[in-house]
Image (cartoon, rainbow, N blue to C red; front, side):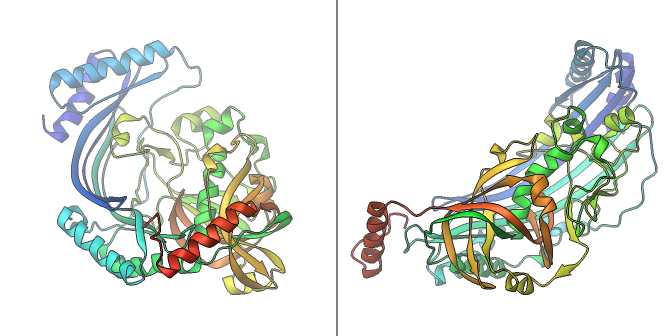
Amino acid sequence: MEFEKAVKYVLEKGEKLGAEQIEVCALRGKVTFLLVEKNKVNTAAEVISGISVRAVANKNWGFSYTLDFSEDALDQTIKSAISAAKAKGEDKYFESLPEPMKAEPLEKKIDERIIDYTPAQMIEFYDRVKRVLDEKKITVFFGMTASMYFNSIIANSLGLEHYDDVAGFGSMFYAGYVREIPPALGFAYKFVANLDEIIPEELGREVVKEVERAKGSKSIKYEGKTTIILEPTAVSNLMWIFVKEILADSVDRGATPFTRDRIGEKVASNILSIYDNVRSPKNPFASERDWEGVPTRRTAVIEKGELKSFLVDYYYARKWRIEPTGNAVKGGQGPLDYISRPPSPGSFFLEVRGEREEPLDSIIADVKEGFLVREVMGVHMSDFSSGKFSVPAFGWYIKGGEVKYPVRNLMFSGTMPQLLKNTYAVSKEKKVEAGIIGEFPYIAVRDILVSASPPALKEKLGLSILNLLIKLGVVKSPLA
């Protein structure tokens, strides 16, 4: 059955099969990608299409999906969704699927070159990046380049209907200088809606810059509260914690330090504002509506330090008797998740802003002692309900307003509320990042517990000897 006909079929058949209300989300698209891992390069193109269904029965909703557009498969999908709704039992807070609401128009243009991007073009893109890295004897450890195009239809039996097209192109390379042990590592990432905005050589030069600034890292002994300046990547990494804490489902069950009774309370520094803005021109997947068909908007979560709102889908908006923010999301690890998962509260595109924004150089110049942190790892192991984190990081030691040298084995600890309240500076410089997708500045934070420890003498001596032998050409780097 054809794509559009399948949508109409589900809407017409849903109530006949016993659904009180029916919603259908149909998606088709194409993903072309190149993957580099352990010096092996693979390319592939994947075409995907499918339909997911939410059916209302017994004052609740159930979910099911199919990749088969035949009548039998669609009937079975509807029946499965109805059975799931009945099995869940009555939910006294469930009222309805979203009713049609007017959305502000959003101007966007699809770059047709992204849709038609081929595996051969992917290889050419990678070759151009790699030539830049090869000149500096930098090795690619991992890389991915992907072009994505999706066409979707969201409709329900209440008359809501929304058609959307999105296309994006992204590339990321993680590389290192292996003539130094441990290797100096760096990465660069860019995601765009227009191919003119991404040039392979520029991406390669950004990787080189990150690797070069990581060379000559030292192990030091440090323990205490100090100032840290988080680079945009690190801010994006840590926003995993914050976003989890401001989603309606987390708030509703009390699994967050930001509870509903704190709306209007100062929870962050006066200079700090955080918005979720799917409509940002920097977002390649900007859309007029979310994955339930509810109109999207720029939502102030924190504004000048004050907690303003949470990220809410239609269900929690009705339960809490507030306006929906248009934050029902789908997706996860791959394109199939947009079909196989029901919509739930989530972030689309975060924006971190400062009431006052300063040049990064002036922020660094004011730091007597501290660390510039590029990235943090292991954020998913944090305690999301309290906001506590203790994460390894890579960064640079700052002394007397100058960035001195990169430091290994950094660890910093704190809580998300503490980090937000202790932020005292926000940079003018910003970057689009993908830990949590959004546009992030550098932020400076006071009184964060930082620790660093040097390796044991035996390990330190062994690494020194190995590095010397590699430089003299006596042995080859084990990572080369």
